[in-house]
Length: 71
View 1 (cartoon, helix red, strand yellow):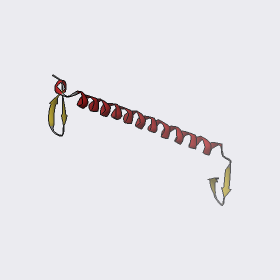
View 2 (view 1 turned 90 degrees about the vertical axis):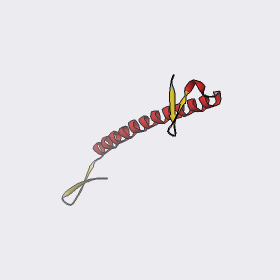
View 3 (view 1 turned 180 degrees about the horizontal axis):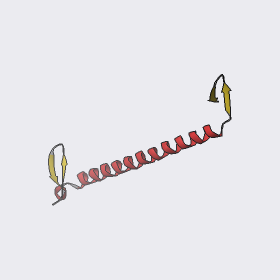
View 4 (view 1 turned 120 degrees about the vertical axis):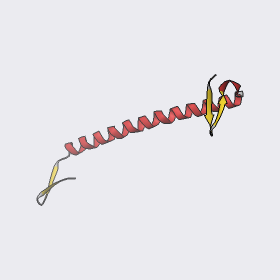
């Protein structure tokens, strides 16, 4: 029989009430959505860094003393 451990206590999934099963399903859904959104956030951060580098490359170089600076 499948079981789940919560707070170091093991529960038989088949013996859980419908309410407990619904709450467990909600937790699983939320965990899945959080993982999906964290992956999406990582992809967006990577894209932002790429756009930032592309912007820097597209900007004209400004000479200040002996160094080059991007404005």
